[in-house]
Image (cartoon, rainbow, N blue to C red; front, top):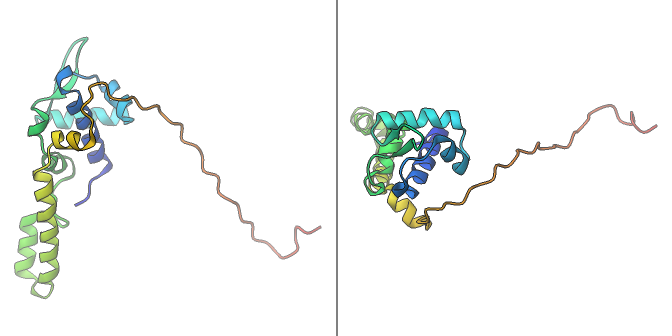
Length: 169
């Protein structure tokens, strides 16, 4: 299982919407600013979450996005599977079971991968957005705003290779 940057952004945006669940719709710009996410990419992610009926959009001056269900009913496995696909390291659990049956010399290896997948699925299937908020202490509705940091250029030392003594004059 690998969570992509898109999956991480989706989880961060949903956590923010969960924190402010009782405040109604939140504008994309506000979500992007508060979570320090790229706004255009966030629009695409929220559209995908809307099509999957995890969030809903509200039109108008007070419009934006909000969760369709309570945070306690939205589980991490649903989000990760939607954005990043199956939880199994190779395809899905059924393909792993098929490999276990077909590839006898490597059966024990695939059984370990299936156990890893099952353990991850068990955790993600039982962890909701509400659980994340409870564990992070983020119950406050006035979440802190992050200030955008400018990315500083990294200066690396320059090594110049030349003939010995060329710069000694």
